[in-house]
Image (cartoon, rainbow, N blue to C red; front, top):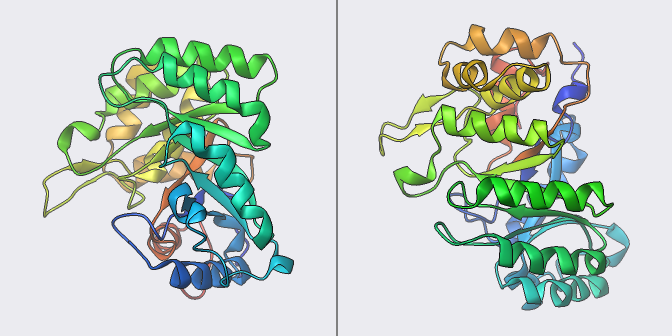
Length: 287
Protein backbone atom coordinates (compact mmCIF):
# COMPACT_ATOMS: atom_id res chain seq x y z
CA UNK A 1 0.00 0.00 0.00
CA UNK A 2 1.37 3.40 -0.97
CA UNK A 3 1.87 5.83 1.88
CA UNK A 4 2.58 8.87 -0.26
CA UNK A 5 0.76 12.01 0.84
CA UNK A 6 -1.53 13.28 -1.95
CA UNK A 7 -0.51 16.52 -3.61
CA UNK A 8 -3.68 18.23 -2.36
CA UNK A 9 -2.52 17.72 1.24
CA UNK A 10 1.11 18.76 0.75
CA UNK A 11 2.28 21.00 3.61
CA UNK A 12 -1.28 21.32 4.94
CA UNK A 13 -0.45 21.13 8.67
CA UNK A 14 2.18 23.33 10.29
CA UNK A 15 3.68 21.98 13.50
CA UNK A 16 2.34 24.18 16.31
CA UNK A 17 3.33 21.84 19.16
CA UNK A 18 4.54 24.63 21.46
CA UNK A 19 1.25 26.53 21.28
CA UNK A 20 -1.97 25.82 23.22
CA UNK A 21 -3.52 23.43 23.83
CA UNK A 22 -0.40 21.29 23.24
CA UNK A 23 2.07 23.53 25.09
CA UNK A 24 5.02 21.22 24.40
CA UNK A 25 8.38 22.18 25.85
CA UNK A 26 10.64 23.57 23.12
CA UNK A 27 13.27 20.76 23.31
CA UNK A 28 10.51 18.15 22.99
CA UNK A 29 8.89 20.03 20.10
CA UNK A 30 12.16 20.28 18.16
CA UNK A 31 12.87 16.57 18.66
CA UNK A 32 9.35 15.59 17.61
CA UNK A 33 9.53 17.85 14.55
CA UNK A 34 12.66 16.07 13.37
CA UNK A 35 10.74 12.80 13.65
CA UNK A 36 7.85 14.21 11.61
CA UNK A 37 10.19 15.50 8.91
CA UNK A 38 11.77 12.05 8.57
CA UNK A 39 8.50 10.10 8.59
CA UNK A 40 6.54 8.70 5.64
CA UNK A 41 3.91 11.45 6.12
CA UNK A 42 6.51 14.27 6.04
CA UNK A 43 4.95 15.69 2.89
CA UNK A 44 1.90 16.73 4.89
CA UNK A 45 3.93 18.61 7.52
CA UNK A 46 4.80 22.28 7.24
CA UNK A 47 7.40 24.16 9.30
CA UNK A 48 7.71 24.19 13.06
CA UNK A 49 5.93 27.29 14.35
CA UNK A 50 7.84 29.18 17.04
CA UNK A 51 7.03 32.44 18.86
CA UNK A 52 9.37 35.39 18.45
CA UNK A 53 9.59 35.67 22.24
CA UNK A 54 11.30 32.27 22.48
CA UNK A 55 13.68 33.10 19.65
CA UNK A 56 14.72 36.41 21.19
CA UNK A 57 15.39 34.69 24.52
CA UNK A 58 17.84 32.42 22.72
CA UNK A 59 15.81 29.33 23.55
CA UNK A 60 16.95 27.48 20.41
CA UNK A 61 20.61 27.71 21.38
CA UNK A 62 22.02 24.24 21.92
CA UNK A 63 18.89 22.54 20.54
CA UNK A 64 19.74 22.89 16.85
CA UNK A 65 22.88 22.05 14.89
CA UNK A 66 23.51 24.95 12.48
CA UNK A 67 24.22 22.36 9.77
CA UNK A 68 20.72 20.95 10.25
CA UNK A 69 19.04 23.79 8.40
CA UNK A 70 15.87 23.87 10.50
CA UNK A 71 13.00 25.70 8.80
CA UNK A 72 10.41 27.42 10.98
CA UNK A 73 7.41 29.70 10.85
CA UNK A 74 7.93 32.75 13.06
CA UNK A 75 4.88 33.88 15.06
CA UNK A 76 5.11 37.54 15.99
CA UNK A 77 4.02 37.65 19.62
CA UNK A 78 6.37 40.47 20.68
CA UNK A 79 5.08 43.24 18.45
CA UNK A 80 5.60 44.04 14.79
CA UNK A 81 8.65 46.23 15.44
CA UNK A 82 10.49 43.27 16.98
CA UNK A 83 10.20 40.98 13.95
CA UNK A 84 13.54 41.98 12.32
CA UNK A 85 15.38 41.36 15.61
CA UNK A 86 13.78 37.94 15.98
CA UNK A 87 14.93 37.01 12.47
CA UNK A 88 18.47 38.15 13.25
CA UNK A 89 18.46 35.95 16.36
CA UNK A 90 17.85 32.87 14.17
CA UNK A 91 21.06 33.25 12.18
CA UNK A 92 23.62 31.83 14.70
CA UNK A 93 21.67 28.56 14.86
CA UNK A 94 21.37 28.24 11.08
CA UNK A 95 17.57 28.47 11.30
CA UNK A 96 15.50 29.90 8.43
CA UNK A 97 12.02 31.43 8.73
CA UNK A 98 9.96 30.34 5.74
CA UNK A 99 6.98 32.39 6.87
CA UNK A 100 6.17 35.13 9.35
CA UNK A 101 2.72 35.40 10.91
CA UNK A 102 1.67 38.36 13.02
CA UNK A 103 -1.56 39.92 14.27
CA UNK A 104 -2.16 43.46 13.04
CA UNK A 105 -5.03 44.36 15.40
CA UNK A 106 -7.12 43.14 18.30
CA UNK A 107 -10.81 42.37 17.84
CA UNK A 108 -12.72 45.61 17.33
CA UNK A 109 -9.64 47.65 16.39
CA UNK A 110 -9.02 49.18 12.98
CA UNK A 111 -6.57 46.78 11.29
CA UNK A 112 -5.21 49.35 8.84
CA UNK A 113 -2.51 50.98 11.04
CA UNK A 114 -1.00 47.64 12.03
CA UNK A 115 -1.29 46.37 8.50
CA UNK A 116 0.51 49.44 7.16
CA UNK A 117 3.33 48.83 9.69
CA UNK A 118 3.64 45.17 8.70
CA UNK A 119 3.65 45.98 4.98
CA UNK A 120 6.36 48.57 5.53
CA UNK A 121 8.48 45.88 7.20
CA UNK A 122 7.82 43.16 4.64
CA UNK A 123 10.74 44.06 2.36
CA UNK A 124 13.13 43.53 5.29
CA UNK A 125 11.70 40.21 6.41
CA UNK A 126 12.74 38.03 3.45
CA UNK A 127 9.90 35.54 3.96
CA UNK A 128 6.23 35.06 3.19
CA UNK A 129 4.23 37.32 5.52
CA UNK A 130 0.75 36.51 6.85
CA UNK A 131 -1.21 39.32 8.46
CA UNK A 132 -3.64 37.99 11.05
CA UNK A 133 -6.81 40.02 10.67
CA UNK A 134 -9.73 39.83 13.14
CA UNK A 135 -13.03 38.77 11.61
CA UNK A 136 -14.65 41.99 12.78
CA UNK A 137 -14.51 45.70 12.01
CA UNK A 138 -12.50 46.70 8.94
CA UNK A 139 -11.98 43.17 7.60
CA UNK A 140 -12.87 43.75 3.94
CA UNK A 141 -10.87 46.96 3.73
CA UNK A 142 -7.87 45.14 5.16
CA UNK A 143 -8.24 42.40 2.54
CA UNK A 144 -8.30 45.07 -0.17
CA UNK A 145 -5.08 46.54 1.22
CA UNK A 146 -3.39 43.14 1.33
CA UNK A 147 -4.53 42.23 -2.17
CA UNK A 148 -3.20 45.52 -3.55
CA UNK A 149 0.16 45.00 -1.83
CA UNK A 150 0.38 41.44 -3.11
CA UNK A 151 -0.46 42.54 -6.65
CA UNK A 152 2.38 45.04 -6.29
CA UNK A 153 4.86 42.25 -5.61
CA UNK A 154 5.00 42.00 -1.81
CA UNK A 155 4.91 38.38 -0.51
CA UNK A 156 1.93 39.00 1.77
CA UNK A 157 -1.31 37.14 2.45
CA UNK A 158 -4.01 36.83 5.11
CA UNK A 159 -4.46 34.79 8.24
CA UNK A 160 -7.67 34.27 10.22
CA UNK A 161 -8.52 32.80 13.61
CA UNK A 162 -11.12 30.02 13.58
CA UNK A 163 -11.27 29.16 17.28
CA UNK A 164 -10.05 29.91 20.76
CA UNK A 165 -11.16 30.05 24.38
CA UNK A 166 -14.38 32.02 23.75
CA UNK A 167 -17.40 31.32 21.56
CA UNK A 168 -17.02 34.58 19.61
CA UNK A 169 -13.64 33.40 18.30
CA UNK A 170 -15.37 30.65 16.30
CA UNK A 171 -16.80 32.16 13.09
CA UNK A 172 -20.07 30.70 11.87
CA UNK A 173 -20.07 28.73 8.61
CA UNK A 174 -21.57 31.74 6.82
CA UNK A 175 -18.95 34.11 8.24
CA UNK A 176 -16.06 31.85 7.28
CA UNK A 177 -17.60 31.20 3.85
CA UNK A 178 -17.81 34.94 3.23
CA UNK A 179 -14.12 35.32 4.11
CA UNK A 180 -13.08 32.44 1.85
CA UNK A 181 -15.06 33.89 -1.05
CA UNK A 182 -13.66 37.36 -0.37
CA UNK A 183 -10.12 35.97 -0.58
CA UNK A 184 -11.02 34.13 -3.77
CA UNK A 185 -12.38 37.30 -5.34
CA UNK A 186 -9.12 39.08 -4.49
CA UNK A 187 -6.84 36.16 -5.47
CA UNK A 188 -5.49 36.34 -1.93
CA UNK A 189 -4.10 33.20 -0.27
CA UNK A 190 -4.92 32.69 3.39
CA UNK A 191 -3.95 30.67 6.46
CA UNK A 192 -6.10 29.63 9.41
CA UNK A 193 -5.29 29.10 13.06
CA UNK A 194 -6.97 27.58 16.12
CA UNK A 195 -9.94 25.28 16.47
CA UNK A 196 -9.23 22.94 13.57
CA UNK A 197 -8.59 19.85 15.66
CA UNK A 198 -10.41 17.30 13.50
CA UNK A 199 -11.27 16.68 9.87
CA UNK A 200 -15.05 17.03 10.13
CA UNK A 201 -17.13 19.72 11.83
CA UNK A 202 -18.10 18.71 15.35
CA UNK A 203 -19.25 19.98 18.74
CA UNK A 204 -16.74 19.81 21.57
CA UNK A 205 -18.46 17.93 24.40
CA UNK A 206 -16.58 19.86 27.11
CA UNK A 207 -17.03 23.43 25.88
CA UNK A 208 -20.08 23.09 23.65
CA UNK A 209 -18.26 25.04 20.92
CA UNK A 210 -18.80 23.98 17.31
CA UNK A 211 -15.41 23.44 15.69
CA UNK A 212 -14.77 23.74 11.98
CA UNK A 213 -13.34 20.63 10.33
CA UNK A 214 -10.19 21.04 8.28
CA UNK A 215 -11.51 18.75 5.54
CA UNK A 216 -14.70 20.85 5.51
CA UNK A 217 -12.51 23.91 4.94
CA UNK A 218 -10.61 22.14 2.20
CA UNK A 219 -13.80 21.09 0.40
CA UNK A 220 -15.32 24.53 0.87
CA UNK A 221 -12.24 26.25 -0.55
CA UNK A 222 -12.19 23.94 -3.56
CA UNK A 223 -15.85 24.76 -4.15
CA UNK A 224 -15.26 28.50 -3.80
CA UNK A 225 -12.39 28.43 -6.28
CA UNK A 226 -14.68 26.51 -8.62
CA UNK A 227 -17.23 29.34 -8.51
CA UNK A 228 -19.55 28.37 -5.67
CA UNK A 229 -20.85 31.37 -3.79
CA UNK A 230 -21.21 32.01 -0.07
CA UNK A 231 -24.37 29.96 0.58
CA UNK A 232 -22.97 26.84 -1.06
CA UNK A 233 -19.57 27.24 0.58
CA UNK A 234 -21.26 27.66 3.97
CA UNK A 235 -23.21 24.43 3.44
CA UNK A 236 -19.96 22.53 3.03
CA UNK A 237 -18.46 24.17 6.11
CA UNK A 238 -21.55 23.25 8.15
CA UNK A 239 -21.74 19.62 7.01
CA UNK A 240 -21.20 16.93 9.65
CA UNK A 241 -21.69 13.96 7.30
CA UNK A 242 -18.19 12.88 6.23
CA UNK A 243 -19.41 11.59 2.85
CA UNK A 244 -20.81 15.03 1.97
CA UNK A 245 -17.35 16.54 2.51
CA UNK A 246 -14.83 13.82 1.73
CA UNK A 247 -15.88 12.78 -1.76
CA UNK A 248 -15.37 16.22 -3.38
CA UNK A 249 -11.96 16.40 -1.70
CA UNK A 250 -11.02 12.91 -2.84
CA UNK A 251 -11.79 13.89 -6.43
CA UNK A 252 -9.10 16.60 -6.24
CA UNK A 253 -6.47 14.69 -4.24
CA UNK A 254 -3.90 14.77 -7.08
CA UNK A 255 -4.27 18.51 -7.71
CA UNK A 256 -2.39 21.38 -6.09
CA UNK A 257 -4.29 22.91 -3.15
CA UNK A 258 -5.67 26.30 -4.18
CA UNK A 259 -5.90 29.46 -2.08
CA UNK A 260 -5.73 27.88 1.41
CA UNK A 261 -2.09 27.69 2.44
CA UNK A 262 -2.83 25.54 5.50
CA UNK A 263 -3.13 25.76 9.26
CA UNK A 264 -1.21 25.15 12.46
CA UNK A 265 -2.00 22.21 14.73
CA UNK A 266 -0.48 21.39 18.11
CA UNK A 267 -0.80 17.73 17.10
CA UNK A 268 0.37 16.19 13.85
CA UNK A 269 -0.95 12.75 14.82
CA UNK A 270 -4.59 13.88 15.18
CA UNK A 271 -5.09 15.26 11.65
CA UNK A 272 -3.03 12.42 10.18
CA UNK A 273 -5.17 9.81 11.95
CA UNK A 274 -8.38 11.48 10.73
CA UNK A 275 -7.09 11.57 7.15
CA UNK A 276 -6.18 7.88 7.28
CA UNK A 277 -9.59 6.95 8.70
CA UNK A 278 -11.35 8.93 5.98
CA UNK A 279 -9.27 7.25 3.28
CA UNK A 280 -7.65 10.48 2.11
CA UNK A 281 -4.16 9.29 3.08
CA UNK A 282 -2.97 5.72 2.81
CA UNK A 283 -0.91 4.59 5.76
CA UNK A 284 -0.31 1.30 7.48
CA UNK A 285 0.40 2.93 10.83
CA UNK A 286 -0.09 6.20 12.67
CA UNK A 287 2.34 8.89 13.81
